[in-house]
Length: 114
Length: 109
Image 1: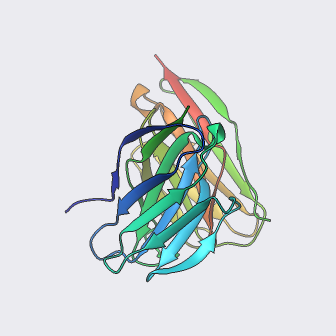
Image 2: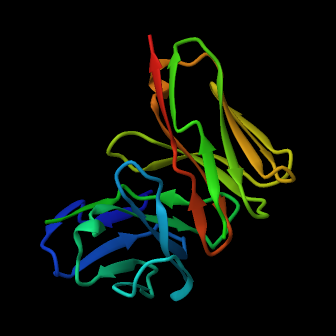
């Protein structure tokens, strides 16, 4: 059974550009969360979606947006990229928010902004 | 605002020794997770702790949760080199999961 899949695995963008990151949850999982992990730090919560609705949002600017599709896959969009957006972006899925078995993380997308 | 604090942030151990990593958090929650991360890799789930007094063990690692003290511990017994990694605790508030800064563990021969 496939785990959480993220694409692309690596990405290099220029300041001011836009980026779209994609995540496919484990089959049957309806909740998807996005995290940003800057090198040397713990992951920071960006968004949580459940049943295609936004259920939570972290302390990130409006340049960050996301959506969840009917098949429960998700996209994270970042506009007007800054150097500080360089990070590992992780997607996690679970059956539902706060599900007792926790969350499964994908391998991440490494974004470098130059 | 929920804060999650881990200590120590860096830990260098000799093989065969025991040590404990601490995770303190600032608000009521009965769901706490421990994850392992190897360099350049994603997060691997180690333990899910769901109630006060919960204790779980897997190999040389044992995790516990005291919701009244808002404290979780990850105890390492007889460390081996393969345990070298960064360990994160995370507190789940349904719509927001907050991670500690991580403990970078190095186990030396």
